[in-house]
Image 1 (cartoon, rainbow, N blue to C red):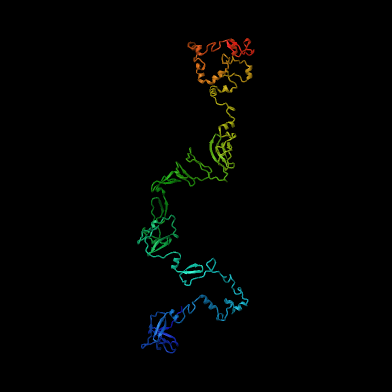
Image 2 (image 1 turned 135 degrees about the horizontal axis):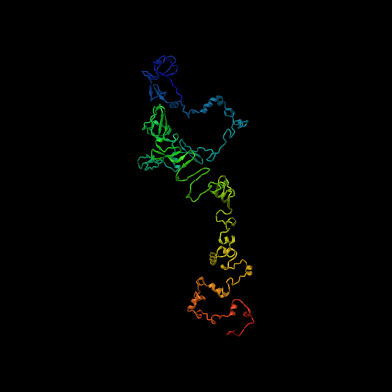
Length: 626
């Protein structure tokens, strides 16, 4: 805003000044306005509206930089810049154009001819033509005018509330501070009250009846009350403090503020420990337990002397605490930088992980509480390293190994013994001792073939068949008598190729030898009728029905056809009679006859033989009628 100032000063200070013709001059000493005439000095000019005393009255309350306006012959009124523009008919936006930088540039670059010549040159953004007819008949094109749509000017756009459209204001009373509301006709200005109504909200005022608190606040507020910070509710920070990122909250003259921790000077805190920031030369250093000092007091050399609080000190020993201020160097616990040695028992609570190319356990007995020992637990499908368990021993020929292993390349499990090849010395293992292979099955009850030491069967019957031990075909079924025989006979009796007469055999090894020998029933003690009973079907049945005690008790009961007596003398002295035994000759038994004896013995000689002469159909023989 421009300010017009007039010459002013006291009469004494400007007594020699001659104002120009019509130049207004303000006499600040007498507060009067004078108009120069081009020849008289200020002190000699007559004040405007002068009274008898030569002064002019003012109206209102003029302030510094106001403009003077005469309201009558004797009164001047102070007018502000805005009031002066109104008085002069220069109201901005009504009478004159408000300042615009673009207009300022235009007025600088354009000449009066550009504006008043009746046309505007193309160089100035016009067509240089004075009428539409001339324009239509000319060769002026959008390109020549620099009005190419999409390059120089915006193409015609659709208006409406839709994607990529232009939106126009459709509200006659829209005002600054209104909220915009989209309607089918464009944007509509909405006041705060109208906006609250549109969104279904209300602007209420009243008294808060209660306030709840959460983490970091405490207190109870109903109709009134106070809340307090409860910093104890905040969780303890688990991460390390970062001074450049973490802040402390503090009051700055009652105003809450925060500041990075590393921006706070340590000296701003209460130094209750009497720390000082001193610089200088150390003149003396004292030492206590665990330290030794050599050199001068001004330049000491300190060294740790653990002997002051440690016992049994020796190289490579580990130290354990024996109290608050004491330690012991353990003779049974040493570490030389690469190997830890524990002489004694080692109790490990938790998991023990040993990483290395080889792990050795030198104990007499290894007890493992776990149910499984997994070997090569980190093995993968691409790992071709053999794995197993071996036993080391010496049979007088050097180290030998026995055990089992898995051949990774063939995916088979092998047992081996007496191998001199060290297991684990290479990725693959090929023992040079006796070895066996389980070629079928994976220890899952799969039948192991006879060729590999199995039976090739999962039942006893099938196993006997595969092994050629079918009972009744390949081997003798169990019999108690055979069991007794095998107990009483020696191996020689069975395996010598013959059975001695004493064992019930013939002492001969073939039937031809028997036929050609002098062995007779008499030599064998097998004379029928004398030593052995002639075969009788009834006797065969009896042997089936009798129990062992009937035969082996030394006597045969009458019920079994015997006498119940153990000797002939007992029989003669007893009351047993043929009648009591049912042996009445001629009634129960046949009377002895030598001829019948021959028949019973199977000997048919001379007149003793029986000749079939025909069939007796009727008649009487020895008193028997047919």
